[in-house]
Length: 247
Image 1 (tube, rainbow, N blue to C red):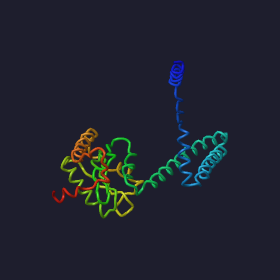
Image 2 (tube, rainbow, N blue to C red):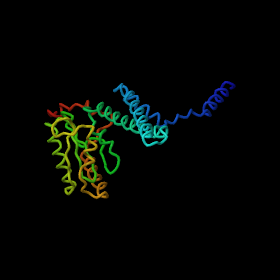
Image 3 (cartoon, rainbow, N blue to C red):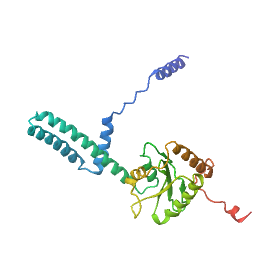
Image 4 (cartoon, one colour):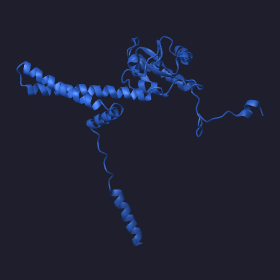
């Protein structure tokens, strides 16, 4: 009996102990993570950043001397501008290496489109897939209209894009459909430039129309998508040969 009471007391004591709070990540933690990632890919980035800071401070001091103003103050001001420039460069390099790491992998287009923040409804999953070659088409709906972006070799994805364009035209016939191919070939858009290319398309729809168009297309996609039974891996599924031959 005494042992049971002791165990109960231990359990109550453990329950009363609050789990340690997770440390809140500050902005400088994120900057350090970005810097570490870039340094792994480009070791010279440290010296580049230092040169930017020192150069900006020296330029600020020189300006102060030329205009007969306290050079310490202008040097600090120059250092602040250099810090902003260094952060901008670090962000650009981090974006470049992030795209370089995922370019050529399945779903890279979805990741690139996901960087678009406002004014667009973007489907994370592909709206069309070639089951043989695993070529894919992704969709983004915004004020320019419906943008279909392919992922795969240019000699194969053309038909996939056109087929998806016809489906979209049947549902929203008066909405422009823009076709883009992601890749490094002729007429294709490199992955790092994909988001900017989509956002630069000419606007032709009112802002209030975009959600309705996206809703209609999403309903079409969900209607045509066949449900997968639970416990079945579609990548390992095999056809029933007896059913194809007849029993």
